[in-house]
Length: 98
Image (tube, rainbow, N blue to C red; front, side, top):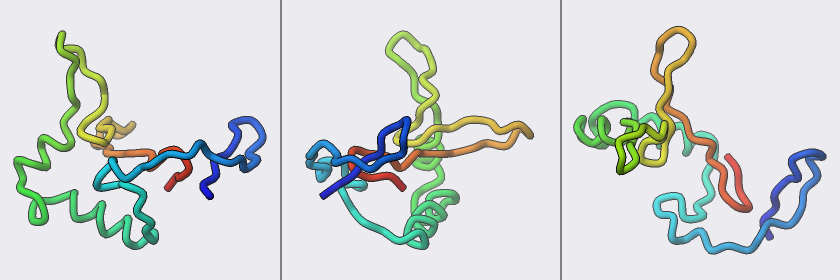
């Protein structure tokens, strides 16, 4: 059984039944915090992926009329208060949150 939370009370409720297997690589895998950190760290510098792939992965995508959508390929690139680049993803899906 998967659970979600109501936005106003924090109470757990049954999540809508959904088959997340189509969302590879996230397809319903369960991982420890360490697994997630190691996976993320492997995507911060060339080695696991080519540098050109990383640049594409973290680049903001655009609509067909050229407007930026502030979303890369499954990640949200943005800039922090001190001008540093932030790469983030909520890790949220129906019935799960990381």
